[in-house]
Figure 1 (cartoon, rainbow, N blue to C red):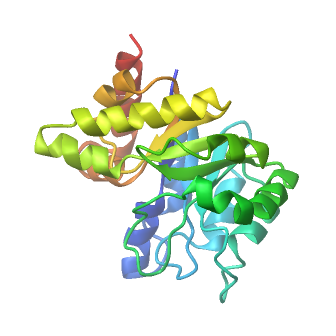
Figure 2: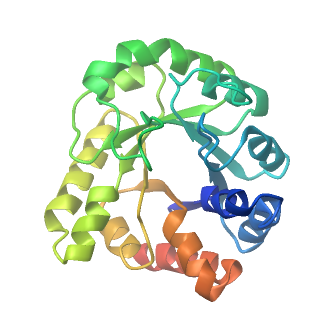
Length: 251
């Protein structure tokens, strides 16, 4: 069954807006794990807009036996207290490193790598991440069907389908074309021997239809919508609702 990794970046956004330590990201992590989440995701950025390196280190101490996924741009250099994505992965040894081509000018991740073009420059970075013990996943656009064999050859194990366009289409009332694009990408990646993750703007309404249409999704990473729901229903109950949606999609 598809596994749920909860992205806690928005907890850090709330904390940073006021300063201090509240809300406490470690307490939030313990709560989602106690509710049954299969893993934790953090996406530290060099501008420290939300989670910081000390958050990454603090949550690493909680994830013995639970999957820890770090997302980030592998080409972003060290800046201030941000040591660089590769250095942070080497230090905390997450189970998975998800490579995302984002920059400071993006409010949030909004596109994936072009594997047909980018595999050659990703290859040495993937090798370094694998040497630290991390499984490597690469963020790709829905509809991508090229470059998966090359990605497998350089050591990539998974791709994460960027589901933002699907979520937008779902909210407009016609997600059939977006779902078909996601499914085509999943099948192409799986044919090359890669597993498939998914994430971005997935929520309780659109998650089930996505999982029923896209074959064999290994993991979904959900943060923004889940934290939004938790403001009204509580974090524990919300995680359990997302797990229920995943279970229902598998029946």
